[in-house]
Structures are given as C-alpha cells and as structure tokens.
Amino acid sequence: MPGESEGGPGRPLLRLEAVDKTFTMGEVEVRAARRVSLNIRPGEFLVMVGPSGSGKTTILNLVGGLDAPTGGRLFFRDREMTAWTQPELTRYRRDSVGFIFQFYNLVPNLTAQENVMVATELSGHPMEPLEALAKVDLADRADHFPAQLSGGEQQRVSVARAIAKNPELLLCDEPTGALDFETGKRVLRLLVDLRDDLGSTIVVITHNTAIAGVADRVIHLRSGEVTEVERNERPIPPEEVVW
Ligand SMILES: Nc1ncnc2c1ncn2[C@@H]1O[C@H](COP(=O)(O)OP(=O)(O)O)[C@@H](O)[C@H]1O
Ligand SMILES: [Mg+2]
Image 1: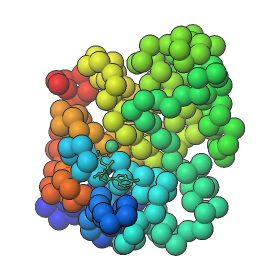
Image 2: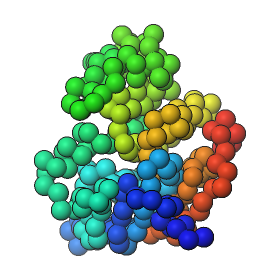
Image 3: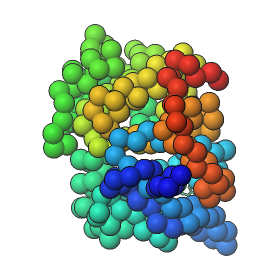
Image 4: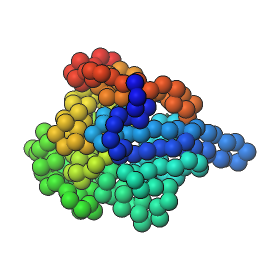
C-alpha cells in the first residue's frame, strides 16, 4: 500500500531520516538505533515493540528531544530538530511533548494535584490540574501523596500530568509495564480516548506484543533496527487486549 511506511497521507508530525545512535563506552560501541526511518502522522497511535535492549527507549528519547542522534536527522513538522539549540529543545520538550514512564516518576513529597501542577506551570496553554485529574477519574485523590495511591492510580496521575500540558505528542515508555492486566488496560483506554478526544499523537513503546493490537501502526524493532511495519486496519479496543 502506498504510504505504508510513511504513516499515511498528509504532513507528518515527526519524521526520522536514517537516525543512528551509537553509545561509546571505552572500547565498546553499542549501536542502539540503526538507520531508523519513520514518519508519524498527527493523531496516529503508534506502538513500537521489541525485546529488551532493542533500542525502544533510545528512539523515544531521540523523538522527545531528550538525547541527540549520532547520525541522521529528525524533524518536528517541517523543523529540523537536529539543528535546534538547547533552548529550542527545552521549549519543544516543555510545550509540545508529554512523557509517561513505566515507574510514573512522580515527586514523592508533592500531592497528585501538585505533581500535575509542576508540569502545567511551565507550559503555554495547560488544562487546570483538577480537570486533568478528573479526566483520569482521580479528582477525589487530588490531595493524596504518591505513597497513598496504588500503582495504577499513580500511573493515572502521571497520565494526568502529561495530558495537562495539552501536548501534541505523548511519548509513553512501557506505560503498563508495572501494572496488573486490568489496570494496564485502563491506562491504554485513557490513551486511546485522549487521541480520539484531543487528537493527540501517541507513541507507546513496549516489549509486550499484546498491546500492539490497539495501535494504528506497529513498528517492530530488533537490535536497533526496524524489522517490520504493520498497519492495523481495525485496531482493537483496549478492553479486548489479552496478555
Ligand atoms: N546511555 C547509554 N550508554 C550506553 N549504552 C546504552 C545507553 N542507553 C542504552 N544503551 C544500550 O543501547 C541498547 C538499547 O537500549 P534501550 O534503548 O534502552 O533498549 P530497550 O528500551 O528496547 O530495552 C542496549 O544495548 C543498551 O544497553
Ligand atoms: Mg526501554
């Protein structure tokens, strides 16, 4: 199908052109990303799957402007990220990207609401922290500290923190990795709804191939290389995922 590896017609939100990332530690070189080329279109729900060590986090960090490639180029809309200064990268991370991590990364001595506020105070056009918490069904836990919340609730706070910035792009590193099956599906449902309601572009990386069913497109990685690109004509609802 034409446009298959490009993510479909229209202007991409993100474009990776032969992106390389090599880590050098003393004598040892690790090629964590090898000539990764990929277009991601606005509103796409993309899942990148691969075993541990296949380069998923490396690629997510490059896309999120947290790290720079050692080769190739990245574009956000038509702007070349690889040519940006540090302040431009900071602005991109702050205004355009929401991050969700496997272990939530909440600040332990701040309440749920304050954790969300940390993100919204820095961004240009945020939601009210309470509104974001309501979207993940946690308005009644706003004054709880992370230690007073279950793992699933903490992950929902971290989803609220990410979406409160109204980011164009949501990057999720093993977002269900620390959660039980039912709670994991609930978090996936939140991500799908977010894409449907706000049009956010979502990239989820995971070693769990079962999650791939909910994606519009699935990118398979092995040893830093894209080995397969699959399009789901009918993504399944998160409730039907089995793992
Ligand atoms: N900062 C780093 N320094 C050196 N090697 C790294 C670094 N980050 C990742 N790597 C290596 O790059 C490869 C890919 O890692 P990573 O992207 O974390 O994989 P995944 O997220 O798929 O498990 C691994 O071999 C890992 O050891
Ligand atoms: Mg990883």
